Image (cartoon, rainbow, N blue to C red; front, top):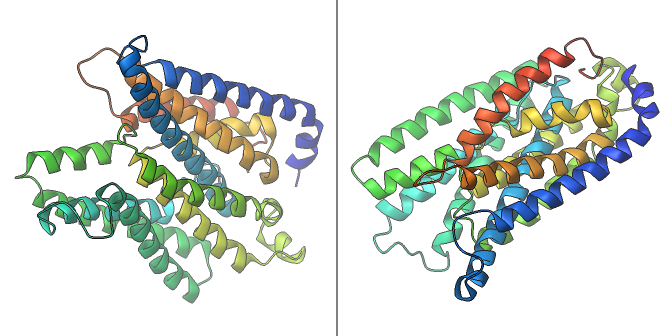
Length: 340
């Protein structure tokens, strides 16, 4: 594993990078609390504005951390820094589950209320169930064939299937303007409507997914040198694949439940951090959590700061920033040894 010695020599720089990421996240949090529509000098509005912005800040931070950590896990699994959490199909499953939850409260429940299930938790419940359904199908196929190529193709096919189903169900909602607007907002990504119950549901999932994903850092490091080498060093590749997929599904479901479809976070953030902290997962995963949270919070601040009668969706901002940034990173580091 040739990258490891170089990464160890950069240990002091990695510590400085962690400190810089923490400071950047604190600065982004301050901006998120003070930037936006509304006058904080009004005593009657100050408390309400801070409460709403705090919930929005927490939602963006959790979604960004979850997507970035999921990106690191998937890239380690496939030994490819160009892999994205969406390749497994669990993101599409979570998105489909969320849309079905929105449709269910409009078409099935005329009153908009379900006994025992508050309306504001229907979306996160739907995303989690959708991701679990996609995960079940994925594990069912990969149990038959223990092959990364089969895993990749299955994820691609599931994503295509779920996208087609989403289009079908969205077409059913075209006659209802409010429902169509909610589905569009969910598709473009948005954390402005995140509430305390959604955060309370998603936060434990993100924490568990990040912690248990980090627990697989050692075998993922071994896989950097190839599957045969990792197997000879004692890595249980079947268990690694299964549990990395599971925790990736948990993280992506949590992120989708909070922010909808927010793209490029799991692709850009890990790729940008490898030159700073190295390729070893025990260092890269915590850095990705900090960097992902910072990136999404800053993008959300930009959504509010740009002039206009309405806010630009978060997913649009992350795409406009993430796509050219990722292209620039590829061109800059294509000859470096940070990529696998």
